[in-house]
Image 1 (spheres, rainbow, N blue to C red):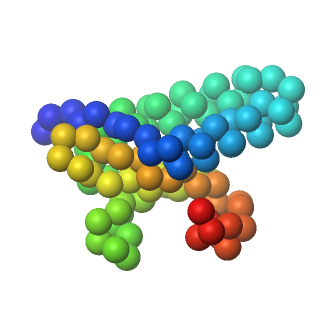
Image 2 (image 1 turned 120 degrees about the horizontal axis):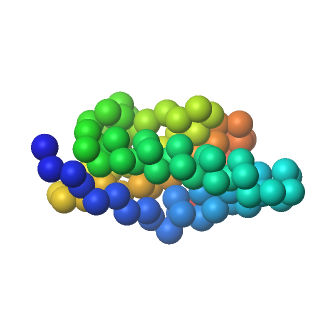
Length: 99
């Protein structure tokens, strides 16, 4: 199976940025944020080679893969995979459906 390009939606990109900024601010260093980013990149490399590793959600189009306390929602669109959301499970779920 050919490797697919992974692209981020603006929403997912914003959510990821917020998480990375939170840890950088809280810890006073970028060390943990960079470690998390490396783990995400490793997972996305695997995802680009095996796009069906995530389980289907209720809408039967979107898939989700778990990474620690995060959910990464994505859809397979032809020759690429689009990351729709990067969700921290510790957040209020009501907030998830507002955006």
